[in-house]
Image (cartoon, one colour):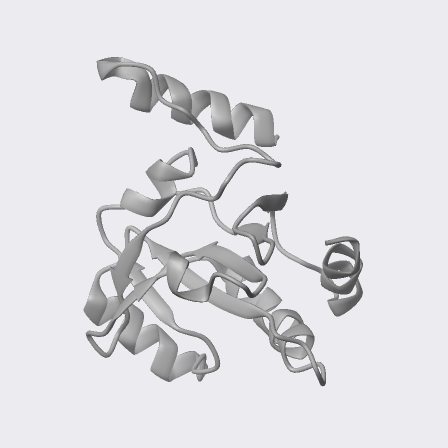
Length: 161
């Protein structure tokens, strides 16, 4: 499935030239987005810590359902995991409302109404969730399309980083 998603994105992005889609083992493309409080957040701000980059959407039920598992993994004692939630093609007002209604305040909520980060990562439009694990050196170590069904799934990936 990931190959299909990446191929579609390559075709769509590649119209004006050759697009490089990051793969496992590649350096994660940096980005900067404003969180729902208007503060700039960059992936590079978290160099030195592992990052779980969650591509999500306010309309994605599976995205919301996986959040308790991500929160539980994040809250493990001694863990220095950073979680960034990128809301693909969602406006600031929609993301704020969703975060408030679902009480999703543990992680930075980063609206990306133009889907610039999703495109940068080679994701097909409207595909969510996609979870990308990035190690402390900024290298992509795992790409997980689809939602997590348990905390153990997340722990298994984190233990392999």
